[in-house]
Length: 99
Image (cartoon, rainbow, N blue to C red):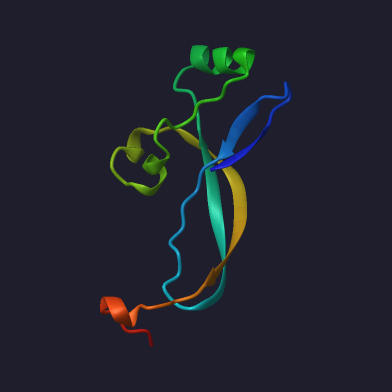
């Protein structure tokens, strides 16, 4: 989730995105496409603009799940670059092998 301030100074959602964490040790740079939910009707869109409250997901897990996402209206909001520094420690203790 990415948050920012709107014209009125309210803290609003700028976008949501999801990415898998790489399972390989090292530094990884991922480009995550961001999207934001949109109101389903013109009246809701006007009301959200007037009140300064944009639509948000109640449960942010919706972003990473596929169930129910086909009916959500969203708009694309660019990309965010995320850098992961992955360290694998004690994986062999839990039965995993690292190549």
